[in-house]
Image (cartoon, rainbow, N blue to C red; front, side, top):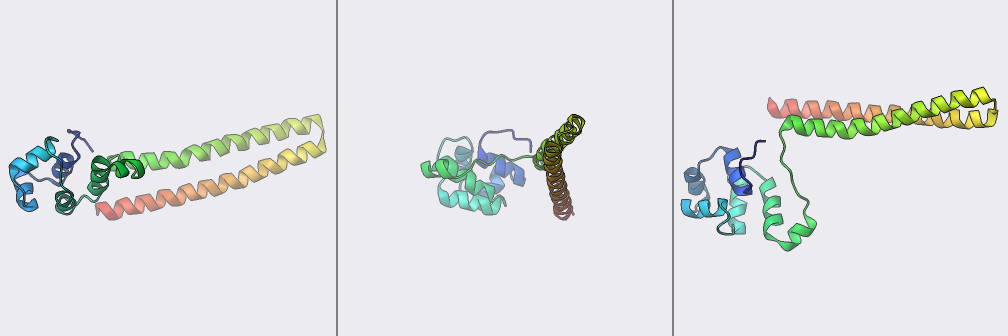
Length: 163
């Protein structure tokens, strides 16, 4: 999402496709008041922010408004970063791929260690390392399956939203 302004209210209005005139009419505020809100000249009252959430169809704006206007909101409400859909999907996939790759590398290292332990000839050490390698192999399979299910659910959600 290309964000041209740092003002959350202006970004939400523009994302909804409203002019200031149309938005002010729908929000039942003057154009001057809306302009002042969007230029951070005046604080946005909570009832106007709530109306913006409804009119702009932007429920995330409520969270951003709480963070912006309340000390408690700043402490307990997490920051929201709006992203384009492809960027967000890649971020979620990266969250899945990184643990999969880490476990995969550990699995390969255990298998390599098992190979060298077999060359040394210590059967107890070889059995222990082989068992750990097998456990990491099972874990790798489970993480891969979960990543695949997550990918399928993301793709299905995107298809449902964009259809």
